Image (cartoon, rainbow, N blue to C red; front, side, top):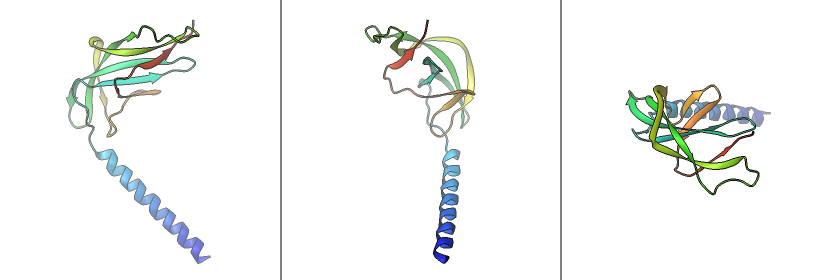
Length: 130
């Protein structure tokens, strides 16, 4: 019985240590830079892709973003005809700049159902339904 109690206490202590470490990680600032491109892939029954460019850094946690256009990559159409790959067009900005909080993992919550992450430069899958 004592062994079981000790095991439970150890488990609780490890959980508390992990939570403390995670709290400290969340306090770290982001490492985004002006000009970085973020990608947001979201959808239900289809995959939408949005790209954003970092326009300005504001304090330690805020960034100003602007939407940028994407382009269909020729030759990447899928056989069913309702999907392809797209890439960002960093010089083609649209809309008004907006501010968002960036976390220590360099992600930005765009809205209640999607977040944007640093784009690795690779084509992104996009699908649609007629």
